[in-house]
Image (cartoon, rainbow, N blue to C red; front, side, top):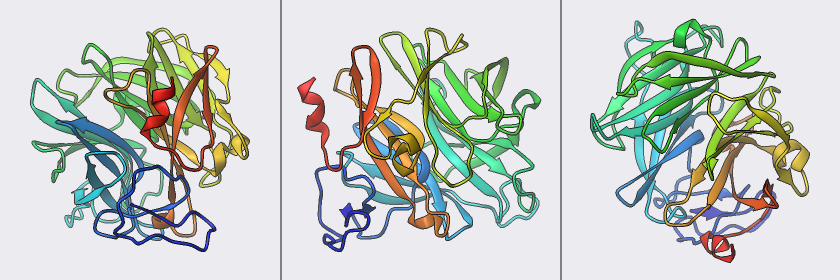
Length: 321
């Protein structure tokens, strides 16, 4: 899956199996093609991981890709999960922007539910909407249902979070990214409820939420376009706050610019206690399809969340804790 670290002259055979994470490397799927799965999130279902992310051309948005894996290292391309529509009257007409896709499973309706940040064709970033699509299988194709502004609020960078009780939440940047908000979803996960609250007002985006020992943690990025900036961590005992600013969880060379990347997701590792993987993107503004992926272990040191740069590591890293 991985081939050639960033800036290195050596490469691995594109079809070679791998058993480690190498951030900043070129990631190849099992078919030998570069993976194109940016700003994404993961779903674990029936002993298989599914990685959803933006399919990007040099600059354009081409829908949502999905890959599957049994081990988190080697990924099979399952194709486009949600494609732009040829119908120019559709909210997802070709030319729209689909960003930050996340998928969760609803055990009551037996549906896989995808939410994305949607910008309408030809409108730049003026629409600021959330879009919802569903499928009866993890890989889709997903059927687009609707797009809207949650409770009338602008909605850009986003994430989904399902709590231990099965209740799902939509975390999103609003008011020109000045606000970060959270809304409880309906029982079918298809709509926002009116339980929608401001978390804090601090011009943040790229939210990545996780939970450990009854505490919620939220990693976010500043708003500097495609350029990297300093990450921040907030914590709370309730999803609706109050949220406390903890500081920058990154450490090591380049930490003050999030190692040149930006947060997108924190993955709980099934079968390993208190094991989480920070996932980020190293955006290449000149060729978005060539943006790289950061996968790093989340550490807990003396009550602090620490994300340290590690060039090459695997899941056995968690066995030491």
